[in-house]
Length: 191
Image (cartoon, rainbow, N blue to C red; front, top):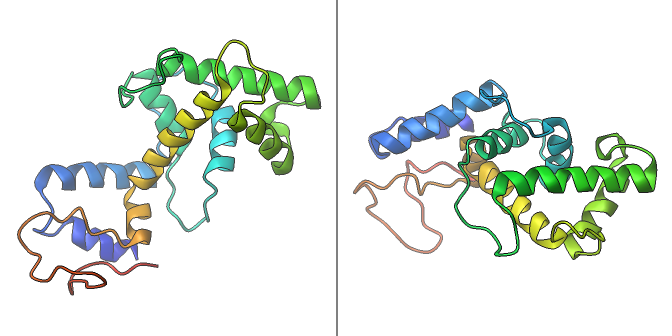
């Protein structure tokens, strides 16, 4: 499936800059998207959280969402939006992860990453509902922002776009038929 999507990316239907960005993302997927800069973020902890938020099948590409998120945070490459009661993205990410891990250790005697999936989910559900008891940070807002950022990274990856059959990357005038439930012969099929 990804081969067909790669053909679309490399076609004249996709603009030069869009092609460059998508090919860079594909290269990062193949390399596990290891961050190129040192971050102050516990990437193993962030990976454990992201893996509960966006579970993936092994065949979905090799994108390392947590590493990309940590790298973007370290480089202040967020989307520029945040809840008014939240600190800057990097500070919020680091503080929320620390609070979550402290909560896991206090209640379960183990780090968040060491918990079984059901235990991780139970803690994340409390954070998502705002019932975590955090005083330093709005848990619900932290969770919403983290989920949104992780989702943006996941959905922006060529492997995900291929699975969705998303052909919106093709913007040049090559769309002879447009309508509900119609596709062009060159469009990738959905999985």
